[in-house]
Image (cartoon, rainbow, N blue to C red; front, side, top):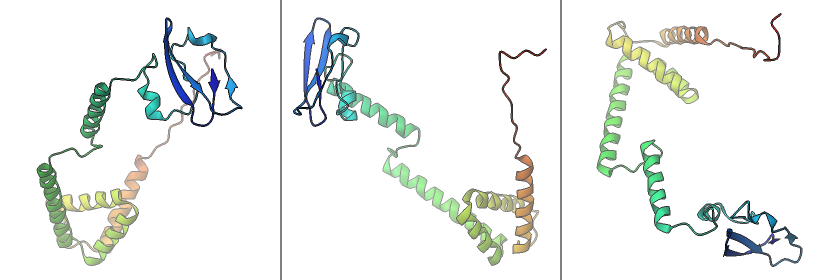
Length: 191
């Protein structure tokens, strides 16, 4: 068998020990490999020049896979990706209704925040959202929850927002704890 570097010709031959894929190169400086290992490896790919799709399209015996089977696999992969949220294969009406509901919820949330926060406090939350969106969302959630329970009697100023942020920061730093566990060597004696 010969290994080539540029566009090899691929030949699939069947024998009593299985099919073998051989590659003949058009180059004169090809490397020759012994053909003695074909009994251990029924399908020997002799070059890395196959593209990934071509590589996977070859079965264990070196024959082409069934196109219907490949189509079924592709459909199943798309279904799995859609279930995991990787693809949007939903009905367009459902997608539109979900988008509308999400947009309305965001509008209600922003309206409530404008009623609770002063303009300076809203500007500070917007600046925080540029850097750390999850932290800004958490601060907004805390403020909205406090307003729903009646704990906020007047508009939240920037100073009160800063105090709230400091409280949240101290709580999160208290929760952060690093524990290092040293693995004991199995061969060590405790004596």
